[in-house]
Image (cartoon, rainbow, N blue to C red; front, side, top):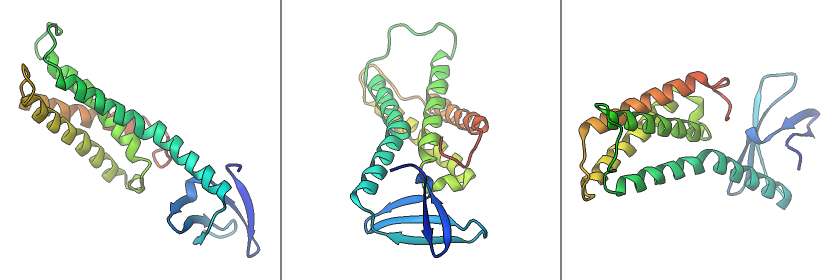
Length: 184
């Protein structure tokens, strides 16, 4: 099925694309607006197998592009935290805090990108706060995890560096994104 398709509906010509479709258990909900008027309509219909396959492949692509990198990044952080402390670290003071800052700036960005695929994308402030909160909570759980790993210890300053990195990463990313209301 093509991404855009025109379908006549009650004398109106409508253009539907994947951004306006939502899969529901009993069909698909489509939000469209008329060409001549700015009214928004919601209607439901039961799709055939071709449409379901198309939408499932779209959802899989969205998951692969936005959520899978976040999951892998979280796993990498977890695995790295589960290992004993590295023998060699950069030699300047607070180098581990800089590493935490940079790592959690990346995590904040990945949470922001993933959360933009959810309905929360419509509220920019909530999107930013949820991204920062998720990255920070993951950082706190990482520090708690490190407390139980031999030759590792939990450090409140690491958690602060995680929070500051998440704030900085989310802020810079959402400022650099050209079209904040679109997924991408």
